[in-house]
Structures are given as C-alpha cells and as structure tokens.
Length: 363
Image 1: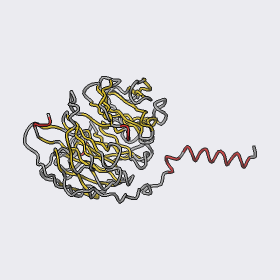
Image 2: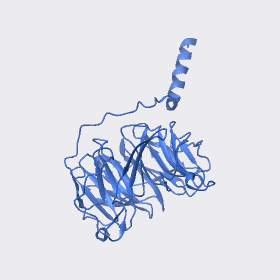
Image 3: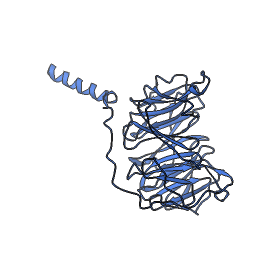
C-alpha cells in the first residue's frame, strides 16, 4: 500500500474511534413537531398531569383528587403513537387514546404488587415490571405474564430499534439479554460495580452501551455489551442514584449523585457527561433553593441534548442546561410528587407527569 494511502486509512480509523469526542456541542437539537393536543383540560382518574408548553404550566383536571391512601404512578409511557398512552397507578393500569386528554381504567388486570415501571416496545405493546419481585407483564392486545430473569430487577429495557431485543439487570449487577421479546433470557454479562447497585441504565443506541452505579462506587461504563468495563472519572466513591441518557445524543449522560463523605445539603448534585459516561463533572449542587433528595425524577429533553428536566417534592419542575444554568422553574401548588416524566413522541412540548396521589379507589 502506498504510504500516503496508508496514512489516510489510519486517519479514518482514528476518526471513527474518536466519534465520542467529536460530537458537536449544542447542535443536537430537533425541530419540534406541529402536532398539538386536541383538548384544553384533562378528564378521568387524576394520576397523570399534562402540559402543552414544555412544563411551564399544566392543563386543568376536571376530576379532583380525593383524600385516601397514597399511591404512586412510576409507570408512564407512550404506547406506540402520540394518541395512545399507558400508566400504572398503584396496581391498576390506566390508558388514554386521545393524547392524554382523558384516562380510563384498564379493567383487564390488577397487578399483584406496586411500584411498576413501563418499558415501551413500540407498536408491539408495553412491558410492565416492578423492582419488588420477579414479575414481568406484556401489555398489548392481550396481557401476558412472563417470568423476569432475576429476583430483584433494577431495570428492564427494550431496544427502540429492535423491540424483540430486551436487556435486564438486577441489584447484583448481573445482566440478561432476550432476543425473543422476553420469552427466554440468557445471562450475558456481569457489571463490576459494587453491589447492591443503585442503577444500571442502557443507552438509546442499544444495549451494548450501558452504565452501572454501585454502592459508594461511582459508575462503570461498557460499550461492548459488558465484555469490558471502564471506571468513570469524576464520580469516584459517590452514590450515583439515577442515570439518564439523552435520547437525542446518547453520548450525553446525566446523573444524580451524593457524596457519602460530605454532610449537609451540598452533598447531593447533578453530574453531566459528554463522552457516553467515561467522565462526569458536577454542574449543579443542592441548595436551599433546590433541595435535592436521593434519586429524584430526571428526564433529558428529546428535542435538545443539553436540556434536563427534573422534579423535586413539592411539586416543583426545573429545567437546566449542560452547565447547570437554571432555565425554568415551575411550582405547581396542590399536587404531590412527579414520579415520572414522559414527552410526547409527536411534540416534545407536550409532556406527561405521573403523580403521587391520594385516592382509595385505585387500590
């Protein structure tokens, strides 16, 4: 091979290997859709709040909350289109077929436990699972129960580009893969993070890219499905409770962490990575104005890789950029915690919030 040609080939290979560092900042912004919600108020069981202006305000709900037993709405997802949504409040799934304007109970099932999360599988349906027991349900035209592969799952994720492919992880760092929509599972890898794990998240680019967070152990990242792992810098020795990848640019990662060696409010903070989790830096420290707790709800924007939404008890919704600058704060009196945050797949300005509510009827 000619020397100049050889140098050119080497340069191309090096460029492909360094795509993480070459990602342009502030350019991964998607143009919002013109799709709009066909209502100005929300009806049905009040477990989900709706915003049409990127969280600046919420639509009024015509069915007020009633006092009673507290229940949570951790599970909330788009069910394959802008019009179809599903949530699990307490032990009961509720659905909407009009973009979140009205919600009705799905009378086909009452789950045997609580705390269910949802993993959408596109037009195929939605998987429902809980961190409290080895249960996995598939919700589609029919509801089918399938065994989860572990005793205490901390995450079950569906590949958005291949809904038959799933990945799951438990609090000991064992990772399972399924290639047949959870009919069967195989142990695939072991994360090196110190057990019990707080989180193990899979990237939107696929299950080969994952970040694991262990007890006072920071995070470890893999780009090859767990064959090799690298300890992340910037969060060594921290308790990393929550991890979230940007759906726009998976090399952008957000994390909520606390330093177990520091006392007081400032021990907690939000961390940010621009290289897929190889390195993090702290961008926001908890304060009296932003009183963070362990593992609060965070949701990266699907329209801008450098925008993060997060909710604290109260209920207060915040929006920050990748430097920790506060861009928006919305205080919503009369509501309880935002347990989950989901953006409409048709328009990122339309947002849905799963609520902690009080009403005996949902149990």
